[in-house]
Every structure is written in C-alpha cells, then in structure tokens.
Length: 382
Ligand SMILES: Cc1ncc(COP(=O)(O)O)c(C=O)c1O
Image (cartoon, rainbow, N blue to C red; front, side, top):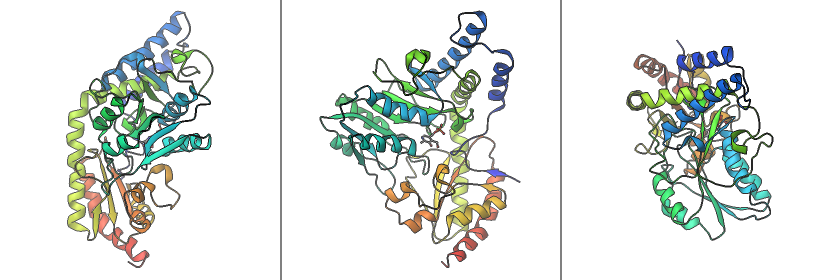
C-alpha cells in the first residue's frame, strides 16, 4: 500500500483537471493573443480560468495575473513592485518564517541596498500584528507575509495584519500558496494588495499559479517581452495549465467545506493515534490556528531523515522540513525560528493530508510508526 501524506509538497491532479487539460491540448491550439477564431478559443479558455480563480478568492478577474507558479509570483511581487521604484532603495517588512521564494528575493534586495525587518514568531509559530505594525517605518515600501506555513501549517493572523498595514497606506503582499484551496479566502473582506498562489498545491498542475495584483498597483514585469497579461508578464500563456488551474479552483470552491472537515478529521485521527502509541512526541505549531490538513510532529531524539526513509520503505510518504529542502539535513529554519533546537528540528516530520487519503491509510501509518520511530531513536542513541 502507498500512503501519500505529503500534499503540501505537491498534490495529485484531479480527474476533472486532467480531462479539461486534455481537451485543451487536443483541441485548442491557438495563441490567446491572436485575433482569429483559434486565438479567440484559447483566449476564452484563459478568461474562464481567470474567472474561476477570481470567484474562489473574491476578487475581480482583471486582478489575476497568471505566472509559472508561486515562486514566480513571489519574485514578481517583490522584485517587480520594487523594480518600479528603481534607485530608491527603502525598507521592507517580512517574517522569519517565509518560504525561500520570498526569502531569496528579499536577500537580493538587501544586496541592492534595501533594508529588511524580519519579524519573529512565537513558539507556536505565530506572528503578532502589533509587532508588524511596530516594524513599519516611514520608508517602508511593502509588507510581505506568508498566510499558511508550508512546514507547520500555522495560519498567520492575516486579517489583523492587513488592517494595520492598510492603516499605514502600505502595499501588502501575502504568499497564500498553502492556504488557497485549503481554507476559505475572501479578499472582499481583507485588504491584501498582492497575493501569490500555485495550482499544484490544490490538485492542479505544476508550473502554473497566479499573482493577484489588485487595482492599479504600479510594478515592473519580471518577465519582459510581449504585452500578455496586461503587459505585466511577457510570454505566451500556458493555456492547458491555466485551464487546469481554473478547474482546480472550481473544484475547491465546490468542495471546500467538506474538504476542510474530512482532512481535519484524518489529521486529528493521525495525531490522536501518534500521541497514544508513540512516547515523547510534541506537535510543532499552533493547534488552533492551523491548516486543516497539516500536522508537524517532533519525535524527540529521532533522526527525522532516517524516519522519513524508513516510512518510505513501508509505503508512507511524508516530509521532513520543507520538501524543497529535502536531501539536505540542514534543520528546518522555520522550527529554529520557533525556538526549537537543531536536534528537535531534525527529529520533526510533516504529515500533510489531501485528496485520496482515508481512515484506513491513516490507521496503516499508525500501525507502522511506533517501531520505525523506535529504530530512528536507536540510530542516534536516544
Ligand atoms: C508557501 C509557499 N510559497 C511558495 C511556494 C513555491 O511554489 P511553486 O512550487 O509553485 O513555485 C511553495 C511551494 O513549496 C510554498 O509552500
């Protein structure tokens, strides 16, 4: 049996998504910028997907800018926004628990003379809106905060942070890559100016996402070329992938309440079972403000990488730290930022639930875990 518990790394395509993409790949070959019938068919497919994204998160279709995923969206939000102010290096506010696709552009901007204040989190992984407010300076050009943490699933108080940032009149970027499709998001109620999302985190294809850029924000394109996406991103659109993203949004909108209920029930079944069967475990991150599908557990004294590999042999796919860091045994920066020691961080695993998981699979994982944890503890002599 294979039990895939790594949906925060990436998630399987839903059949409806595959079918919609195949219809495009087989039958719609026009360039969306072309004025003829073939072009208009491609344009219509892209526009429908734009409307589906807009409907899921409560924005205007015109604010959706398609990208090649959330890494590009985050880079565009930071570098594109700031590129528009070339020569005027200023100040930015972000956090100590951002994804590398935000952290790396921040580091580039620092090398170019920008100052960045990274607000820290508490031991539950939570930011405090008052501390974000205190970090804002007269020169602050942008605040960028992750909505849901990819490793712990912790949900930041985005509504409160958005209110303080808006009160200071500063653009607010949110990396919502792990939140979209997993929790309700209604941007009619939250003043967010820029928001990144990625299709493959919620059963859409890899390599496609969006930067939501509201209103008339001035920013320079990072991909310079043709006039696509209202001049904000050059390059012929990946029509099939965009259509796949749109259908993933439609499914998410339809299924969100039951998805949240079902994933949370499986996640809680897993955590209750782990607590009952495995001694010396601790949950990393807030248990109240967290994605319904994510559980991050510290197995005290265990070698997380060994445990991950042993579970893989047993048919169970999980992650230690962010998937993007796997292969390296550097302790998770997110857990270190929450005050964990490198050993505690190294002994932690992320379980993320999604489409296709059921109670039988969770019970199988629970039947395997205690012995494997014991071996991973013995391996480091704990
Ligand atoms: C929070 C977060 N932001 C950004 C990304 C990057 O997304 P993509 O794989 O679409 O480039 C990820 C993916 O791991 C993520 O979890």
